[in-house]
Length: 108
Image (tube, rainbow, N blue to C red; front, side, top):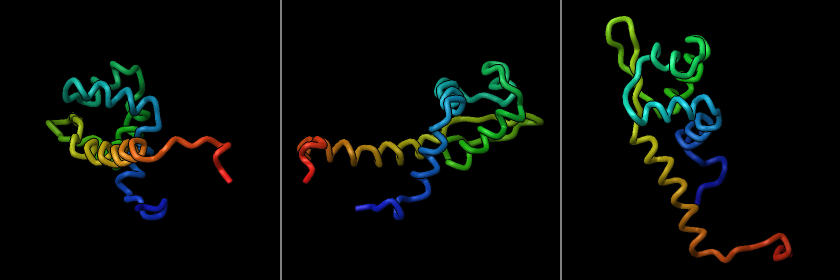
């Protein structure tokens, strides 16, 4: 069983990246197709400097990958990293199925 200090950094950085609404919007857009920074800025109505900060966080969490074509950088989802996060959460789903529900009143 993992303790808070043994949770892999990929899990921690992944959930941190998912904790910001603008980053969630970026991921939702990238679910449909690969997009360049200029398109993301236009659709989300944010400056490139603001978006770059959030894209950097998503990239450091391995949730997105980038490729350069000419002067533009294109972003797409890194699906294997989403599978890592999904597997982590699935462990809790399995616990829900085997552990009885407890309330505060059940505590000693």
